[in-house]
Amino acid sequence: MFLNQVNWKPQPTQRKSLLCKQRIKATMKTRRRINSMRRISAEMVEISKGQNQIRERQKEVRNFFKEIRKETEKLKRVTDLISEQSAANQLRLDLMFQIVKARADNDSAKDAHLTQTLRELMVKTSIGEKASF
Image 1: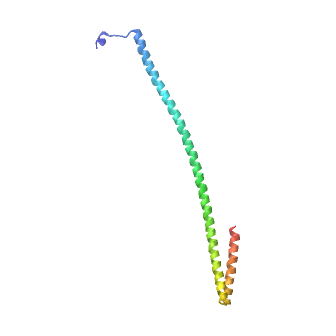
Image 2: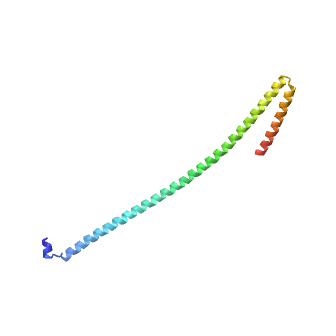
């Protein structure tokens, strides 16, 4: 309060030291900002690299799952084909068993009918096999 009444002004050397202190504070703040910006920039580069690696890995995983889906579909088709062949084989075996039974019973009419049915079935399955491959 006394200084306000006297209208005190700092000496030129004091003024220089005050200005110097203010400049030092300002440059320190600027340096801190620059350093923090550099650090943030470096972190952003690292994050960008990490994101790119994640994207590449996701692509690899997607391609891996596509291959698995293709293999699954292929295995499903093969399984269906094997199942159809197994059913056709079972039908032929049943017919053959009935033919053997008819022959054991000396039933030639039934034997001829079952033999003809078996021949027709064999022709159909051989045509179907040629068409599927």
